[in-house]
Figure 1 (spheres, rainbow, N blue to C red):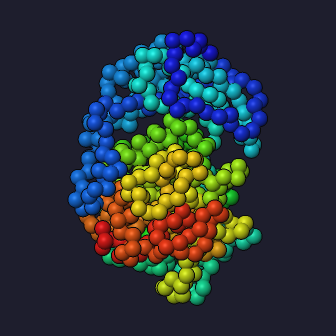
Figure 2: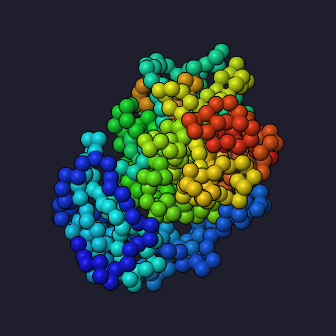
Figure 3: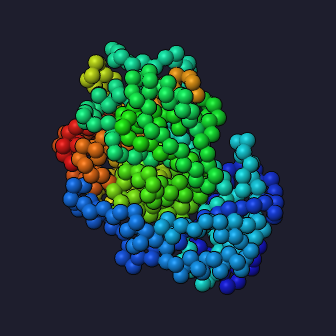
Length: 527
């Protein structure tokens, strides 16, 4: 490891020791690939949350992706400095994307440790071996301010998929298509009817991007599933990021997440093109998948659905900042980002007795999607409460300890943050059916099953946005500031009963189900 003399710590790069057992140093000859996130060349920055929220979607002027790259991409002089830095430390430039402000470097573990002043060790946890680091990353002084993040030195698993199966329930034998009295499961089109999604549109001309950090799908399964629903199979394309692949591994793993996301989005908006960005489950993979999708000028997604996440305390501040900036770039080009709020209640699975929220749903530029338990009769909703099923999970929600309260939440009644003196962003913004007891009928690796979780709510809202985009003829983009102005105008089913552990539902916004579940047609008209 290089001497830290004449080095400066990279702000917000501090990382805690990973879970598991430290088994020894990393092989010095192990090949390591990393992504450097560079500063923007812009002196003015992207439009702020307040600026984006000041206008209705119909009145906004979005940047084209090429304009975003020209105005806010990396400075060529900064790229040249990174090339020189790489040569000095025996690293190879594998890829450059000034638009994404990303440079990929590769080299041996020994060279990486020397270049960034870190110690890399091998850890084992939950049957998986991975590389880890603790403390800060150090850079030469001449790169101060140029490099905003270094990702990939540590490749611990970063996120979890937010889907839940009903404990003790066997897999179903067939997909239920016809409406039933007091159903125990719903097809996505049934939920679209219950939530009065706009009709006369199927998402034609829209592209829904889906981020996946593992698993895969089979085209034969998709053809079978949509055929059973008497729908045309949507156009589904897989994009590889950082070596991630469409790699089905069985119905009990992350395939359930992948198939759930595609089938929910595709069944509600079968006319939309669906592009699935597969990346490794690391902070580098997650970030690179998002920036790839945001800057994808081939597929041009207008909506992103993200059903993976982790408690804010499990992320480095540099990673949360970089992801939030990527979502801000998405907003600048008119892309709506829908993120699952988590399935472990107000604790988000952290065992310290305090409430926590899930990231990336906690980003102010994300539409945080919480969960409900829904009962219906025919095509009418009879009741809807906070999803909290003992043994089967509960909706995430609470107050961010990373992101301050946005102006558009100032009058929403967001309670104080668990961090004394910090006024944090409230999560979620909206909700939808997520309880496994009233879950989604899907097909995973040839097996029909019922799945719940806020994982299903993100693609449900993403599909709704695609329908509205088509009907309006223009992307709705960053919705949050507008949605909070529509509170109380009938665009939402206000959820007033239930708790996610630390927080209670009530009239208006609450840290369980946000503004509520959608009345899709009224929401479209209000926009």
